Image (cartoon, rainbow, N blue to C red; front, top):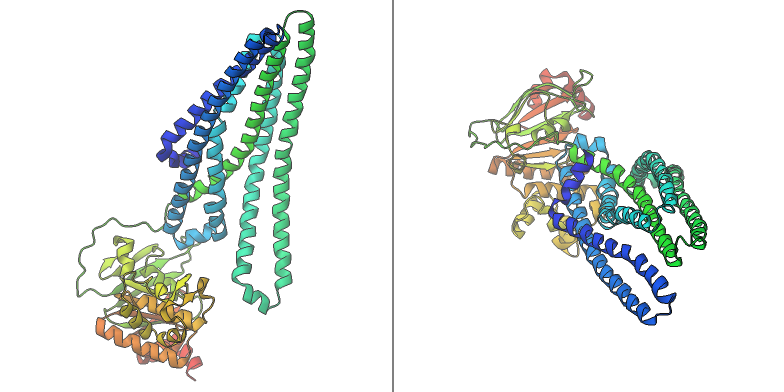
Length: 577
């Protein structure tokens, strides 16, 4: 099943997949005639001293070799185009599927593993396709054709070859069966190694701050050793294949020379026929050696195919809707939660991360969402954008169930500023334009001003054209948050979600940002969700949702909640005392 899924991506290169083996087949046919021509040169030319015959047959051999070279070049070109194109199509398909998977599915597969599957595993499959088109037709044909030609020269002596072939097959099958599991282990160890490397590179500041460099070095070295041991196990077993096949091949040639010499002395064979027979045996055994090496290649490719096919076979947990969304009613609430139940583990233990959430958010409202760590605040916001789907209940945007929206339509209504500010290697202006690719310079500037980012941007030597390093490494936490907010504001969303987006800002900047966003919401009727653990950030909101351990404990204004919600009173008593 996994091979049929993977090989389906070769369909655009069907012509190349037919032409490459065809030209390789022609080359192999021509190669089979060479030993016979050589035998005639020895028996009819050299033995009789006929120089003209030798030159004539030499010209024939040169022609055969030349035509064979041309066929080989055509095959190589076709195989290269097909394998490189296949690798490109497959890589794009895997990347596209990864982008459609839910956050939970990506976490389950693992980011380091997914990186290896897009790069290393697809590269291995690409190489296997190239070898398939170049050698899989040629090697079996030379093997079978060599046996037939050897039988036509001397059936009795051919028994040596027939006895050697089963030994070859036994060695190949044993190696193949043992190495499949080992190569899978090697890839899993490589995933773990990539994970540790990624953690160390992204967390280098924390590692140095806590003087954990030596411990992390030991952890990395231990992982490298495990990967080395697994690789050595697979490598040693694969390396035994060539010596074993060489031993069988050389033993067969010794037997042929021995018995062939006896046949020549008895007058049953000519010297040229013995040489031609040895050439055919070499051809057969070399073809089998190629097959043995292909076994190693295809064993690795089989493991890689399983890993890539697992990604391609994973159906996105959040599927895109094909519904035609009607124009929402102007009287419908901006967002509504109706008896929402949600669990990250599909409620396997009858425990929900969000339980029976009921809330109606009118358009243009500024909504504060507060609660302790792990209370479910970010989870609730993720349901609005359909990063996850609920197990029970319904989330509505503009009176329409979010599952009925095409994902692009739904998410185009929403501007998100996540807890962790993710910026990209581009200019400041280009990062802001992620929210709206066709935004004018003035729109970019206005968004930056509203996000309180204009001051530090103008201090940059290149202003909006200043480069942002990967992940915003050359910016402070507060600067990254403000750029993330500007990126969300520039798209002029109907719903703005600020998920703890001001945690790195000082109180003065936070207050100025809140005033700016509130003015913008009143002017354009933007519904704003301000997720925070600071009471000061959300206490002036039109509505406050109080979350605690996945439950909605209270809904109302600051004063109403002080009177009615014990959880909110406890938070305020700590922060406002």
